[in-house]
Image (cartoon, rainbow, N blue to C red; front, side):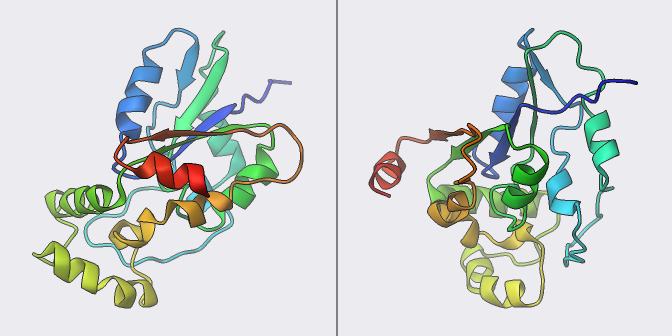
Length: 196
């Protein structure tokens, strides 16, 4: 029977905080295998029917464990097998699903100053022609209503900046040796992390 290869680390986000850069650097290392799909977003879609409102096209979803593990089939002798899905930090069920299916996985979270991250997220959505609102302030002011109407987390610019709340879901109490690694932009955020 063929060995099922699984990741031993996951980059969970945050979106617009250099996850693509880290993914690219790691992919170049001979001892690291990264999935060919940069953002599989499997745990966002597994056991979940979200039907979010999203402007523009929706991508295809990986929604079975078999399809997810197949992303790692081409790993050979690499010691580290990983993926980067920057929405895992924010999506509510991801931490629980990751713990359930990959209890030994290492978690990497990259954090960026929240206002800069939110504005970069807004600009990303505008460039992709997915954001119909022409003002960042108006988009922020529309956020609560959008969340109530089930708009995609792509549009949750402000809410995605509350890192302490999001990361508390990853504080697993199983004693299985899980590790949460932080990479934080050094603009005062390190102080916030040290005091909570």
